[in-house]
Image 1 (spheres, one colour):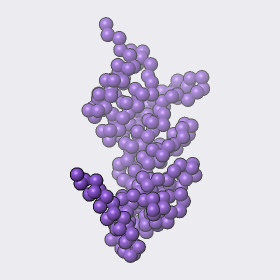
Image 2 (cartoon, one colour; image 1 turned 90 degrees about the horizontal axis):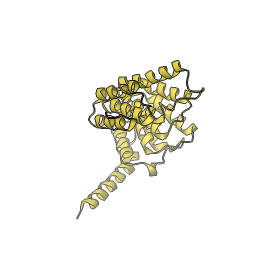
Image 3 (spheres, one colour; image 1 turned 90 degrees about the vertical axis):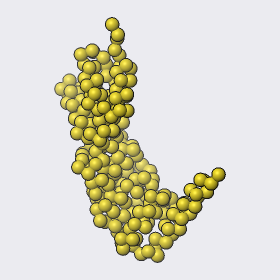
Image 4 (tube, rainbow, N blue to C red; image 1 turned 180 degrees about the vertical axis):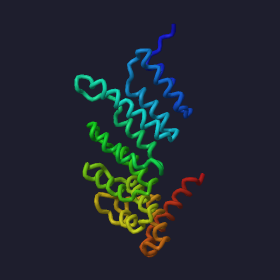
Length: 235
């Protein structure tokens, strides 16, 4: 008789994750209990990723909260926190929640993981900012940047661009322009911004929320970038 262990089941779920077969991955995960195979964080996160990669945020949330309920009913192990869900789990679910209809869950998950004693990473905040962008939650996006700054996490171009995009989608062009040009609160200075930033600034200027003369340097930087890309394509 073939002995099934955690490695075997994790491998099977990884294949299902790649094929976006989230229902099958969850079914495989359920086989752990009757087989008395000890779960580990990797196996659970693979099943979670299968749900998240299919943009099934409902199944992702359910999987995490079901495990939390089981751990709560079991009373924990010697009063210690279970190893799963971990920060990778929450980052995965936050990525799944980066949709217009589910963005509100992102702030809630951020509070829960902090209550669980987990420390959010830049990746965590980027996932929350993606959710804010898709939900046009510009105020939440700015609060997220402030929280990153308070935790001494680097505010690179990615979080800055995501927050600016949230402002733009909400029609708050002036706030987006200020964020991209002020260089305050630890956000990148204009010299550190990237092509996405400059495109956003030109879009804001085109919408009439900024002086086109102020956007001229952005256009110059975009032209320089385009010339560099063309040079790389030359044989």
